[in-house]
Image 1 (cartoon, rainbow, N blue to C red):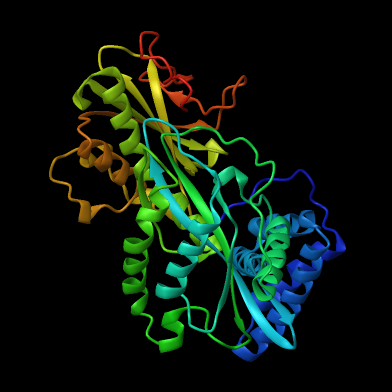
Image 2 (image 1 turned 90 degrees about the vertical axis):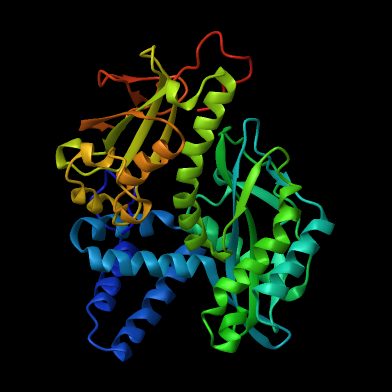
Length: 415
């Protein structure tokens, strides 16, 4: 289940109320036939709302349902995502359905992770690999000639809708696309995700992906392996000095969520590698301090973990990593009996049940043996000056992560 931001307004507009009512009707449907009737009405209203740019109506409906009807909330969220990342278009008498897909690339480095324009030659090569390994034969594809950082992606469903519509028209008409203009600045991280965005279109009713055409979903895994093997060298050329891992190209929101999850362990490994190499110490000279953070600490629900790193002989937090929780992961935390059980050598990777267990296992696998976890939950506090998250030190004080003054120059800008 996905969370949304809180709003101060409790009054629903007409469009918001209709979204709520139709989503509830769809969630309560007793047959597929009834569900399809609700679905058509919901899709029509979502299309109208997003086309007019009324994101606030969608947000208000989602917030209302999140508080009052979680089943209908999930129904509406799924419909809004589908309505913004897919569309139907017509060209020269042929009706197409189109889907916005994202190609996530996990990247980690001691330096900087690139983003920005890509060459037409490289884009043509990557499109050929997508056609050759993942897409059905009777599809059209248009890729944006830009490698996106996460904060350069659409920020709302309405923006995603507008992008999908524009790319779908370019896909079926074969018109060229331009690189992203005036891209916002992106914060530097040791491990981060980059994205390629494309729209794939097929005649209405025809398959989009190769495993749909053969009706063999098991072929997804093989298709992904072929894509990763062939495309990795091409994408590596865009990210000099970085280690990379290509994830499965998927529908936009699914791909982004999977990338958000997969970048978390890479962030911890990159942090340990950075600190040991920059400071010239072994991993066992570091200690890790873990705190659970919540938007509402009174409820006891953890929204993210923050891991602060310090030198064992020094109490100051020198670096930090945020591990956000997604879906039902916060509910899984109740399965942890004691922190001491997590730090015993006998725990195996196959036994991991919760994010906390995964964090501890990752730290141990990186060579960090001194690990402390605070039992209390902290509020989601950030630095007033730079906006960076604050991390708990050994005394449970929330502090800014600062590299030592004698650290090599050029390392302090990473958060």
